Structures are given as C-alpha cells and as structure tokens.
Image (cartoon, rainbow, N blue to C red):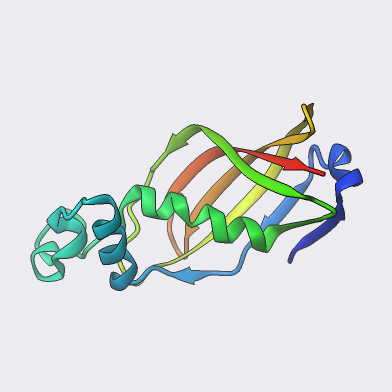
Length: 150
C-alpha cells in the first residue's frame, strides 16, 4: 500500500515503516537487457542451459539489477505531493545475501530511519530489503538516501 503525504509532512516521516511492495517476477529478458546495458554477459546470467549446471542451478539476475528494482518499488511505497524534484542521492551498506534465480518473485520492504533538512529540501535515510518469495535470506539489503525538494 502506498503512503501518500505532502511535502510539508516529510519531516515527520522518521520511524515510519512503509511496509511491502507487491511482488515482481524477474525474467530472463530483463537479465539479458541488463547484461547488454552493463556489458556484463557472464554465463551465470545469460546462458540458461549452461547455468542449469552452475552453482545456482539456473540463471541468476545480476545483483545490481536486483538493486535497481528499488526504483520502481520505491514508487509503490511512497508518494509525496508538492515535490518539484526527487533525487536518488546514494546508497550505504549494500549487500547481496542471496541470488535471485530467473523466474523468482521479489518485493521490497522499507522503513524510514531518519529525515534531515538539506539545502532546499529533505533527505530521507531508508532501510530497504528486497526479499525473494519463499527465500530464507533477502536478495538485497541496503540503506537508501533520497532527496525531495519542494
């Protein structure tokens, strides 16, 4: 469910658990397009037949592809009205504890840890975890830094 607030309410968002997004299925087409965009055509990603005999038993998504899903997931969790600009400011403490095999479904959970005023806006520090449906470990754990300008 999307949390909808106004720009003026951003300062009060610290400590808010934004909950979970819906699930998305990671497809081989996505993996192949990401491989083309990043010039990372390692066989564990793009050769499904060879990957079956590999360490994961199937082709896996690039860790950075899984991390990049935070962008569309983020829009499912928070809508801020009255904002002129939104910026992905950075990431801290990024880890990839578990691989995402092609065909797996993933979702994100996020909690706003801190909100600080920055020149012309607010910066949110967000603990986010991209989880694999039925998985024991998350695929991605990261602390995102997002800036909103009014």
